[in-house]
Amino acid sequence: MPGSLPAIAVAVVGLALTILWFGVYQRRAAETRFGVQALANLKWRECVTVILETLQRDGYQLPVSSNARGGSDTEFLLVHGEEKVLLGYKHGTAYQLSEANVREFVNALRLRGARRGILVTLGSTTGQAQQVAKAHDVQLLDGESIWPKVRQFIHPQVLQQVKDEAFAQSRPGLLAGATCSLLVGAAIYAVGRPELSSAVPVQAAKVDAEPTQTPPAAVSSDAAMLERLNATARAMAEVAKLSSTELARRRVDAARQVSQIPQIDAATWSAPRTLLVTLNDTDGKDQPLIDEVCRILVQYEELRFTRVQLEPPSTSGLPVRWRLCE
Image 1 (tube, rainbow, N blue to C red):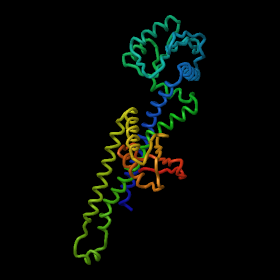
Image 2: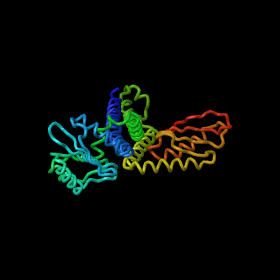
Image 3: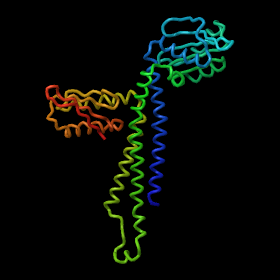
Image 4: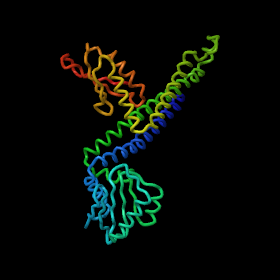
């Protein structure tokens, strides 16, 4: 029992850190990225409506007048208590609010008789723009800061899709981290077991003339396990550095390699974690084919736990089958 306590402690700490990093921090960051993109996919008027609803919750009344400048560059005059507040909104994720954008907005703020302003973009802001905005009582909200405010006001179906995409991106890290934590705990427990054998009574030691030693096979097994853990940790660290574009490119490349298997007609991603494999021929014996498909997928660490959906030819009479790569 004492030898198992360090192993349990390491496994629990590893699981806690995994949940905190991948289940909370990385998932929230992914949800923000997908959420901002979902807002950008809306028409600018729909997105402005969501932002206005959000501000209304904070005490800003709906526009008493508005001045559309055309395109996606729109300004609204709001009322907050007794003061007028000018809202400026720039649609799309490509915008980067600069010092010049803020100064232009400050001029518009004065022309409209507003005491302060809120300038919103789904893109980003520069440090210089933040300084100028602060000096002129203008609040800048970029995509990363606006999403937590508006997420509860978008359509529930869109929000659920964003959550699903964020979870799908963080799930490989969760699974790999949990697996690594358990394997490290198991390795520590296995390495600590020879210490328990030292508690064998002296009489038994006398019977065995040769001292007890750890079998070479056990040492080799522990070393191999630790090497696999280190390799998995290195692979997941590299995956965490990849951008969403690079991850998408890897998914496309994996599907392309799978589709080149002679027995497969096409391979497409029907869901974030499901690869639809359409067969051009099958005898119902899936294991060799699944082994080859999974051999390709596990080369990409984030695709290790992909579910493979086998779609047989319509003339075969066989049902659709699902297999899980690990």
